[in-house]
Image (cartoon, rainbow, N blue to C red):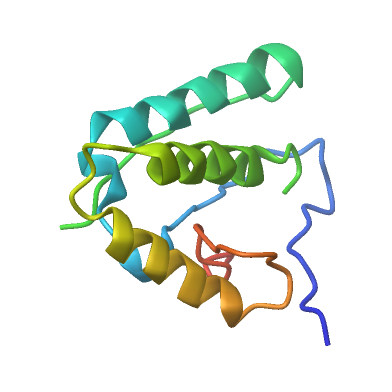
Amino acid sequence: MAQAGYKNKDQGQVHFVPCTVVQWVGIFTRSVYADLVIESLKFCISEKGMSVHSWVLMPPSKGSGWQKFTAGKILKELEKSTFESRKSWLLWLFKSAGSQNTRNETYQFWQQDNHR
């Protein structure tokens, strides 16, 4: 049975949308992946009319499609990476998480239980 996705019911309101990488993996300690998040936000603001009041990208201590788009960009970058020493482990981790969720084809990058 497929899991239902989270949907903002009132698109005209301000929403707090937390996004957490599965297993709290510190992927954003590499600037290449953090830069992809920033590029994705800029794209959604300019091309999809998304309003962003504030955002923060913290490494650990669906309305606009931003999460799916950003995860796809980061995963593609990770797959082709020649410098990422954690490549095999990260891909294995995201694939393992994806296999436990019927809404994914291969990988799961963002946790799906973080909506309040």
